Length: 98
Length: 503
Image (cartoon, rainbow over all chains, first blue to last red; front, side, top):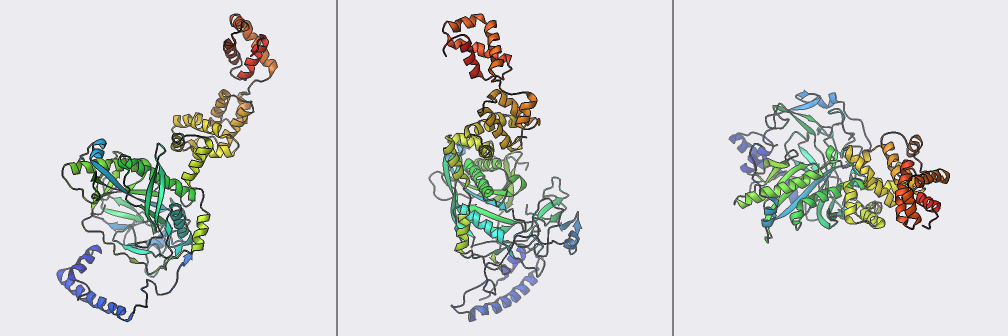
């Protein structure tokens, strides 16, 4: 049983706004299937006595006090932006999602 | 937006259908820093001056949750009579949109910090309606987009957009109701009363100023109609970002009328988001949800679970302030006023001012009388809120003290208040400057009384003949002669005494 279908890859690509050609869909479906298969082996070794976890360390309640720390300067913040305008990140037209 | 929307009258809509609502309210917490990093949350800063690698979603940056943010969430949950999770996690809500540089919003999914509560709200006539709360969860606000090149600053027709991430990461609590059923024709009023009660509650808890006009509190109104007698809910529309109490009521009302028109024509309601327009009170279609939302939620691996100890929860519960509805009911009883009177006080924004005036020494009846009478009129005339008037509760209390001691009568007190509002100084300064003391000096009054008797011999004879009621005319003459500054009761006594008649 495949871990992921071609249709699911197409769906994920659409959600991520990636344009994939038909041959790319086939290609990635195969690759992702291999990856999912490899990761799925974890559940073979994890027995009933191993609870699922979302964090590698058994910690809870790691919090910080509500104290202001220095921010980046706007120049630093924008230094990696492909485009900027009026000290803001400039992004292409956003369509169809008003 | 040029197409007109078919509506049926509100009465006709309610005659055929039963509205069901769901309200989602987002509250921006008033913490000093963001939810997952130490950037400041101060409003009005220059664009992109309050960001860091964490809230910009830089690779390798790690979030740590704000303890005050969690505490505020628990307080809100407790005040809404919710259960507080013993253990819960954050989740990534994945979506592709530039308002979050991370391409996901850190939120909570199936493990909200608070769940299963209720909020009792009071309607205009004093009736109470219980709104059940589904959940309250922690998340973060998004950045602010500016759309450039479009005709109206809207996204359609824009050539590009500009992003300021100062707001990205500010703590938000999202409060979701269970379906609100059974409100019938009062559904829009219930929606408004709920949002107002929630706002009062949030303010009383001190976790946010919850100013809707500043975007610190925003409401989504979900609404559907079902034919009377049917159990199953109809398809709902989601009107987003309705940002004033009045708009919440109008949006619900509009959607009831619109849905009814569609259903009457045999049409089907499309599940979609809609935008509310303040100017027309109408909604227009936004994004159609073609495919079920696919946010691919999964537990946030960069944050550890939040497991509030029961001791902490109980400590927070013990520290909750008196909740607004309880306080209002207590004051209503103490003051001996009706629910309608209390509603009027609330609508006028006078409750806290009246309480402060009483705290400053005034009696409740006088405090209410001045704020709801003279001062409400003054506020109305200058189109301002009561708390924007140039008079403090302490000053109002001082005026009532001067009335109680007999130094001022009501008429003079009104002039004192007028003077304070006009910036002439404190009540005592206005009294001095304008010379507004009640004349209670018998010597001065007796002279004025004798003059009035001499000037009105006919009236004086009637009184001597036993018609005590006629004394009113002479009192009026004395008040006129003293420009209203005489103590009327004392004047009457002196007149009767002067004419040798028993009062």
